[in-house]
Amino acid sequence: MSNWKPKRFWKTASVTDAEGGWTVTLDGRPIKTPAKVPLVVPSAALAELIATEWDAQQGEVRPETMPATRMANSAIDKVLPQFLEVAEMLAEYAGSDLLCYRAEDPEALAARQAEHWNPMLAWAEAHYGAPLLVTRGIVHVRQPEDSLQALRAAVFAQSPHQLAALHDLIAITGSMVLGLAIAERRITPDEGFNLSRIDEHWQIEQWGQDDEAAEIEAAKRQALIEAARFHELCR
Image 1 (tube, one colour):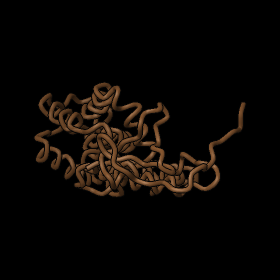
Image 2 (cartoon, helix red, strand yellow):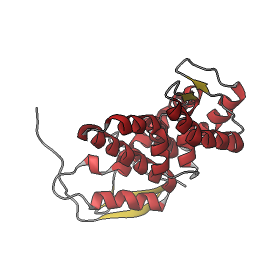
Image 3 (cartoon, one colour):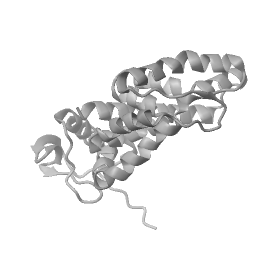
Image 4 (cartoon, one colour):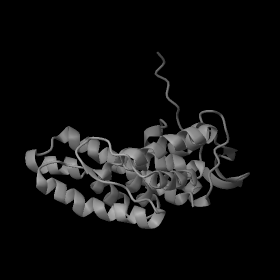
């Protein structure tokens, strides 16, 4: 197995306009995605962020330190050619949204969930015309079809780049409502993450948290923040 890793070969990463948007050039040469497609993004601000990631590379290129670049690659190589499939997959979250399933006990946890989650469901009803039913326990509750269609429409209204970011916003929180609320700037990424972790934080209060779990949580929080920033810069 080869241990070869790409190394920085360019002096300057620059932003330039391109057909369909903006791109980043390395010493004047436009960068491409892993599928060898021109990397074009919808805003100069997003291209600037990507250029900053490339400029920050020293020695070996570390893709894990380039979240905006990786998300742009995903939008172009994966989401764009199969937009319908990705959008349909995300739309399925509306039928089993985290915020609709409350603890059977203890009562204090159920009360905390209601206090923090009910306002978000009220927002979804007001903003999208999508009231959702709430249950206690894990038995599936069928949501109103009109509500599912309204939330589905919100997903399908995303551009491919936005959809790539929305994928992470929904998948990390486990909630269509929270993902859309972050995308719509109704709540901050930190607020959305904390709302999605009410159950876990309750358990931490009771039993404490180990270092490994804390590291995993921090990584997920950071990924959510990065996805929200990407979505915002797609406007």
